[in-house]
Amino acid sequence: MNINYNNADSEMKKLSWRNPWLQLPDCFYRSVQPTPLDNPYFVHCNSDAAQLLGLSAEQLTNEAMLRCFNGNNLLPEITPIASVYAGHQFGIFTSQLGDGRVISLGEVQNSNGNRYEIQLKGAGLTPYSRTLDGRCPLGSAIREYLGSEALAGLGIPGSRSLCLLGSSTKVRREHLTTGAILVRMARSHIRFGHFEYFHHRGDLENVKILVEFVIEQLFPELLNEPVALRPLRLLETIVERSARLLADWQSVGFTHGVINTDNMTVYGESLDFGPFGFMETYDPEFSPNPGDELSRYQFDQQPEIGRWNCLALAEAFSSLLPKRIIPAGLLRLYRQNYHQQYLLRMRLKLGLTTPHSDDTGLVDALLEALQQGKIDYALFFRRLAEFDAQRQNQKLTTLTTEPALLTGWLDSYRDRLSLEKTSVHERQTMMNQVNPCYVLRSHLLRMSINSAEQGDLSEFNRLLTLLQNPCEERPNMDFYSLPQPEKLLFT
Image 1: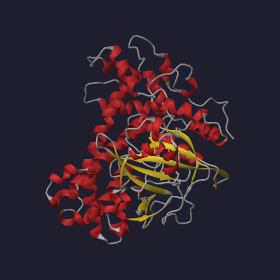
Image 2: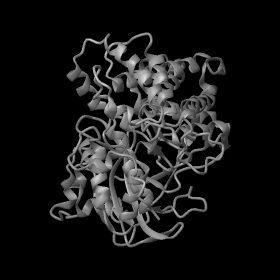
Image 3: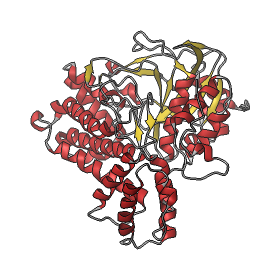
Image 4: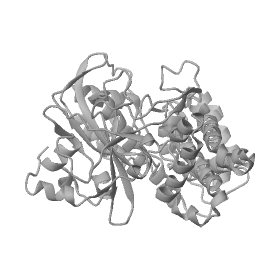
């Protein structure tokens, strides 16, 4: 990648840096300096994410940015920190976790007033690294880069990958591999676990301080609420956002794989991409995490786990709630927001513009047909836009092992479409704007990582381009829109 060395420092100074964490007591974080990689270079710079900061890709790819993100030469206004938090991991509480291989540089504000926290993942040891090395292998960084951008391309809120650094530094996992730094950004990286850390230590004053901090930084509209009700209103806001996020995931077949409370943010954004996966053949028990032996985080369990995590957060808020009791209505609030958002998403995928009382039943019957017929989830919805009420629709029926079951559902779908006022063309256009042609299939991700580790970034670049605009069909790209060919093997 070509780097612009002319007036490089000026691009860094265009960004307005601040670190709101410094407003909090020292027990919330530790100051820490990044440990630079050897011979760093840009693997990729994300022009889409850069635009959110008011930068072009060219302005991002210069020597000053490279040296800053590698930790060689930070601007004076940047004060890097690592924060401490706890979390329920696979349902078991761990009293102290923290940013083990993540360093926060602070926030950048764009011209619209929106602020984004910039973090370095893989920039070396922090006080919370425990027995780990604080580094990030290139393959792991690419996994998160593509995962976060795939969700962004589908309109699902989450952290964004700003750029990726490679190096000559080697890190050891299963084998020696290239050390990398993923530069990621989000509206907030504050996790449920930040509140849990102080609550379970009995440090209720700092729970209160953190609640006030989150309201001031992220939800200032809640300052209009009576002071005594602000913690409850904040909790309700987080629950609503979390429920909608889980509904978004379910609608596109995304399975996070590790929805611990330390991996859920107060802003309702997708965060931390380890063993995630996009479900291909529809299977409610789909799990991309081989370490999840009890299937806690499999696809069909995600909505319930999201609710469970919200209850864990409510417990951490309990000292600030009226009568110190978790409101019974909190569960209802979660379920209402989840079902409302999920049905909204599914109606759009089905090309339905007007609500109908039987729509939930129509969706449930479709999922049953997809499961019994072992149908590819993304491919089915993409082809459904071509549904013709006057024909046999072989492009759909050839996808299933149970054609009679699917045909029965298509008859119901035909009847439902008769209640719509939109034209066939309008319906097709709408469906093709929300149903992706390209999703991050597991074999494509593996292929991209394998090639990158061998020094070939062509697959990574090609796949990223498709995922950032997944509904735009490209010529000669059928390989990336279809399930894995049986003859395509990986070692």
